[in-house]
Image 1 (cartoon, rainbow, N blue to C red):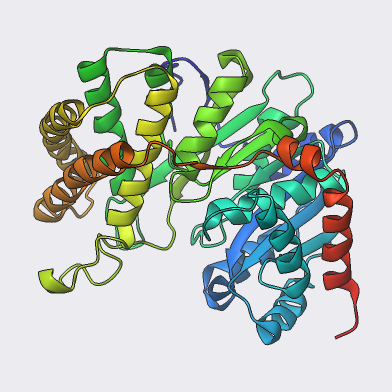
Image 2 (image 1 turned 180 degrees about the vertical axis):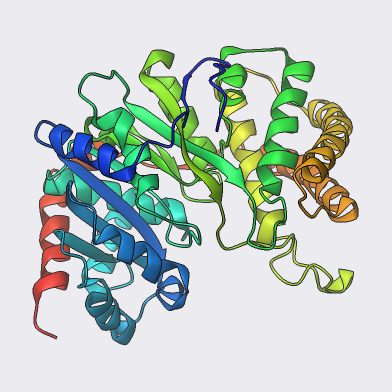
Length: 416
């Protein structure tokens, strides 16, 4: 059972009573009469071959309150696309799959590219951006949730708890972030990038640059890198979304920029959350040092997240120099090592496995990312870190969304 402590700038909605999924869903059925509810699932084709997604679909088949499910499918050729259509046909709800690599959507992306409006990089951010654009075009939902397709501990209560704060017309929230504990099936404490990078880095930024409403806001989230969030559909047009691993930080930052704190909350959606784990360098943890790729795994993830934070600090008016990054790295390193000891104690009292060497090795990689991200930030003052908002797309190409909707419909309904 969770505590009920409220910390920071946003509301925290706890799981105090393990209220049944049936009760939550009964409420959501009532809410859906006033606010139509949807779900976005960004997916790689490889996830269709995993053990997690079949369980997710088995649970989603039982969800009674969704008006639409939108699946963004990346890295799929024609045969894989046809397989995906059959794979998701088990869903009883109205659903559409975005074949992002298909000829129709690729043609539309080339139109955007001519005007320098297309996403600049492949990745989850691009996938989510297109899915949200489709949700705007379809106009089937007033509020929607998004979660990943690799959640090994999934049950449909996650979706119910995630949507509830924005679905309830008596609440006043426009955005809700999910949080949970990260423990793997082999009883190992996970979530290293949140525990060992984001939390100590935010606190190092407060010490180095001074406490600000923005930093206090980010530090209020119990799991800022959670891939699960829900929002009101009417706020989608103005969102600017990063295309890289800075997606979660970027979305939180955009929400803070555009909405008052009392419109934002976080909610506990699972007791224990486990999904596909990444190693530090995208391969086995014990691979030879010479073979380690700093542009993969958690090393790449930490670099993208740190760059996203630096961009946001600059937008907030902070002047960042090489000396700033050196001081920040030193402050972060000490705070992160202190947190390693705290997490070790937490693991021990809960009988979890904990590798002190592995944890401190991650801190060293993340500390290096701070300097590297700083160098990249200073060397690229003209970098455009976000995909353009859908407001911008609609202004430049007023007929784009109807044609986008038609292309998705044709992909999903034409005979094989």
